[in-house]
Image (tube, rainbow, N blue to C red; front, top):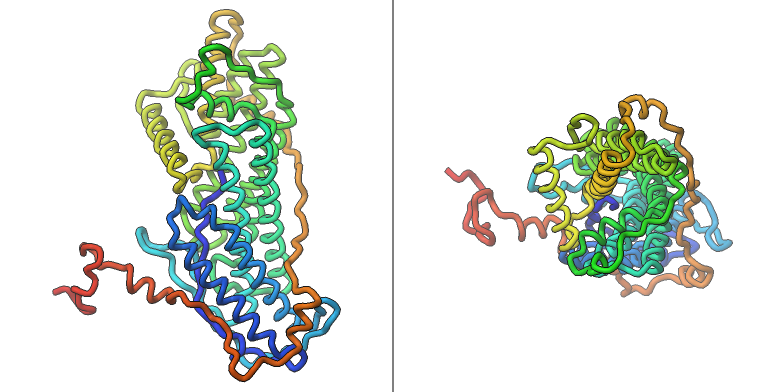
Length: 472
């Protein structure tokens, strides 16, 4: 369940005021137009209801790729690199000035994140590519949401959705890793927390952790079993029992531990960054807990398959401890009444979010994993009490002997969209005297705030009735 990133918006800018080219004079004008389209697309996307934004993500991705190709052309012109075999001569008139909304920077409760003033093309470059990384994560999120629909997908559809989500996570990781490397090469001083090296590094580790967990989800039958059990429309229980195939439990446990290590690195990096959104910090911690809880659950399955039910129950106890649920009583994994009620309320709240398609997944799958552990715990404790009668060892001793993590993915290189040869040739022609770049038709962000903000305690739409000064 990927983090629900909010896409940033930006102010307008005309590159013709900041750049000139003797070899490709139309480049600043065309770059301004591509950015104006992106600016309008981001603002329109922000106004779409949250439940409907997923279907608009391909439009945002297309606008980003179109603008990024011009952004790389501007960057190549300043650095002396070639595009499509041609060298672009680009002169800097003055440093560009633009604003972006910092969506990963901590803000006051109930207030929208503030805008950041940027005074370099490099900062514009980082914010734009970071937005592309967010879009890839949101596209993966949209694919995974189909697994929780009222009508469960067919096995083939489920596999396709998981494979698509994995590809999007790897693309997001490639973008963030590219920005981390670029920041190190150019020794960039961040103008905002969102594009600081610790946050970019944390996002690279986070997306790798999510891609690794998706690898496990592809062959893990237990989440689908729990979802099917909660499906009120399903009648399969009337004529057949639950069939769970055997899994490569030990391998999956090591993959989950590798994901937990990536999440722990992301958590440490966010700890070095100031004023990061608390929702992101909590999500990274929950993802680390979920990954370690999954690892303990797979080790429990591996142990139970070997006939050691008592040790398997102890691993499930450690899974609940890693997930943060839990008081234990005589090794049975039973929670106290209040903690059980609190956990059940949180699970139902998350279920309603999934049904509405709004703000779901902020727990990083922690509650879903807790349900799987509870299902196995109930089954194995009953089995051990009636048939096995095996002793349940202390779970603390098992955790200290956990295996090492095993990597599955390697970070892929980022392949940026670039202008083709025909587009470069068109840029050689000088613009017509009456040509004007499209900077966007949407209102600027300050105007949006002016229209939508209401004084504390006031009724919606009553802002004009209040004076700008004191209320007293």
